[in-house]
Amino acid sequence: MSDASERRRSFRINDHISLEVEPLNDDSTVQDWRAHFDEERERLALANDYLLLKDQFLPRLAAVQSHHPDVAAYLRHLEQKIDRLAGIVQQRELGLPLRPTHEANLSATGIRFVHEAPLEQGSHVGLRIVLYPELAVIPALGRVVWCRPAEDGRHEVAIDFEHIDPRDADLLARHNVRTQMRSIRRPPDEDE
Image 1: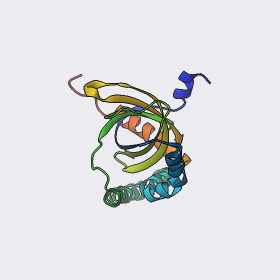
Image 2: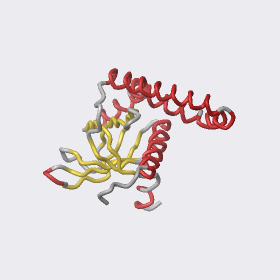
Image 3: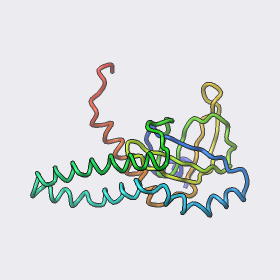
Image 4: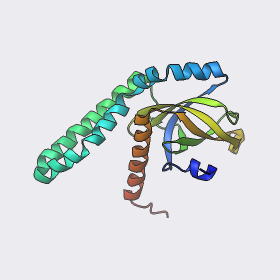
């Protein structure tokens, strides 16, 4: 597979997220991070697992909608309330930012963003990505593909995910599709 096709093996979007980046400076730190990955993922997974379960039941909700639209409307109303409660619990338990902190180009296989400090090409980083509005938190181990100067002395960084839970990669892909659909449905700005 060529470098270009490897980088584009997953649908990418520009998105507003929160992001924590932890440079992992030596092999023992990387191994320690890998060893504790499953524990960290389970600690962060409330919203992630809820969203995946919710997506699995969409066909059933569609079936209810076709036969009992009032019941389906009520179920969607309950789902919205559960979404809000899950978001509040996730935000409070993990101390998540209420609003995104970064703009990023995001896919299920990697991320590009602007970072304050340079990161060495080929080095490993631990990532904690928060998706909005879901407040899903995705931990991932990544390798820096490239790092180049950006505006204001900051650095644009591209990272390929080396270790991400398959459920979270699926969640990222679904999030990207939902985000793209929201942008398509949004009416165009009058300024344009």
